Length: 323
Image (cartoon, rainbow, N blue to C red; front, side, top):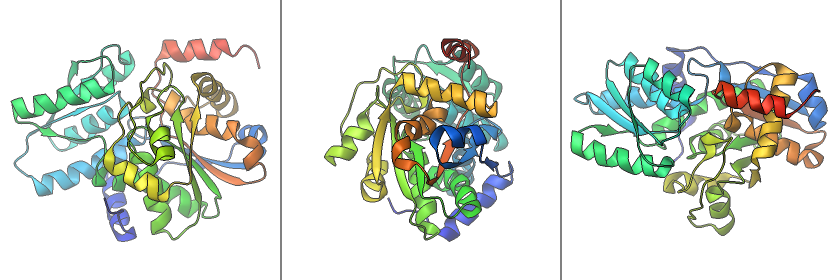
C-alpha cells in the first residue's frame, strides 16, 4: 500500500475537523521527571469516542459514500475503539452498522457501541475469530465489510500525528502502540509527508507478540494472545498491508508486559489525572522500559485511548498502593 501524500493527509484532516477539533498535546512535569526526558503527550483520549480511531472512521465513511453510494449497511469486528469509531461515523451518514466482538469483551465498550445505535453481535473467544465471523456475515447479509486496516483509516488517523508533529517538529522519537497497524502506519505517513526524520518505535503487548515476531523475522508470524489489560493490542494475526509499511519504515518494535502497562496507567492518572486504557498507556510503558536510552531526548507519546472498564481500572489503581 502506498502512503498518503501531504495533500491527501490535509484533505483527510479537513474531513475529521468537520466532526471534532484537534486534540491537545501537553508536556506534564511528573511524566518528564519519570522518564528524564521532555515528553509530549498527544491526548487522543479527548476525542468524541475517547480514542484515536474515530478519525479513521470519519475519513473511511467519507470515501465510502462517494465510492459506493448504494451501501446502506456495514459490518466490522473490534475489541471496542474501532467499533465506536464505526458507530459514530455510520450514524453521521445515516447507515446501520453491525459490530462483532468476542465473548467477554469490555462491557463498557459494548455499551458505548450500542449507544451509537449499532447492532452488536458476540462471537468467538478473541478478535481473529470475531473478524472471520464478521466476514461470513458480510457475505450472507450483503453488508459492506469494513477492515481494521485500510488506506482511508490510515489517512484519518494521521491527522493526529500531523497535529503533534507540526506543533513539535523536533521530536526525536515516537512510541506507537500496534493493534492492527493503522496508528503506527499513520505515524509513518505523517512523519514522511512532513519530511521529518523522527524515529518510530512500535509497541506490542508481551502477551500478543505477532507484530514483534513478524518485524524481527521480516515475515508474517502469528502468535497467541493472552493479555488481560491491553485489549487494543490483542492481535493474533497481523495485517499484510500494515506489515509492509512497518518493515520498510519503522525503526524498532518493543514488547511491554501487562504489569508494565498497568504501572503506566497508574502514572498517567497520578501525573495527569487522565484515564488511560491499556493500549492507551502502552507507549508510556515502553518509554519507561527504555528510559535510560531516551534520557535527555524530546519524545512523543500518544495517550491513544481512555476506554477502560471501571472495575478493571479501579483494581489497577488499588494494586499500585499509595504514591
